[in-house]
Length: 253
Image: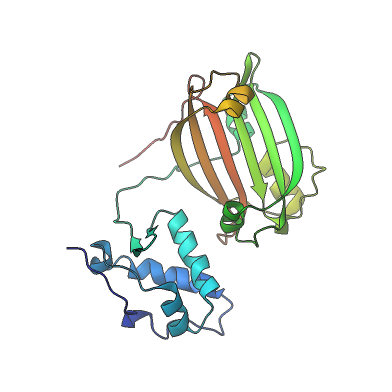
């Protein structure tokens, strides 16, 4: 039975260490991860309002929102306007055991690909990009657009946004392996890839980029790449032609 509650659970009171070097939003995030595993929240009980959590924990509402946004992005929380925030019931999930940049993947398979477009620009972070990279909305970020494929044409369009802390200038040779640039030139180690994959259809712009008809099936993969400390490095969106690309996942028992 689904229940609701405006009360702040006792288990979250006085649990933050304000003297710790760990950011407060990270502490709130870890606290919420434990709370939403509890049976009552898995069965649909509403989480306390953000303003109530902020008061009890002695922090700003924005700090709480930063934590809940992260969990919502990971599909652990769902918000419904006028109702509240609930935990997403746990399901069986799989993660890719190995991953690499596109060029590294193609190189490892002996596939020679063509860079049809490499475009670098600076753009003010949108709400989505700012949330995922954990920066202020409107902050300038480097945007990298690449169209890649075989000799007969492109089969994937990549759009990447990079965290300003990396220090990219826009003058890099992005025909190189991307993660070689980050590691070798900027001492930034990509360690974790958090991915979502969806089936979509090509709109007018995407059809033009990938040389397909409007409405053609595409595979869209969103990838958030983090360093060993789980800090975001890159937010990447890949659009693949479904007739030219297969995404394979090996699952071991």
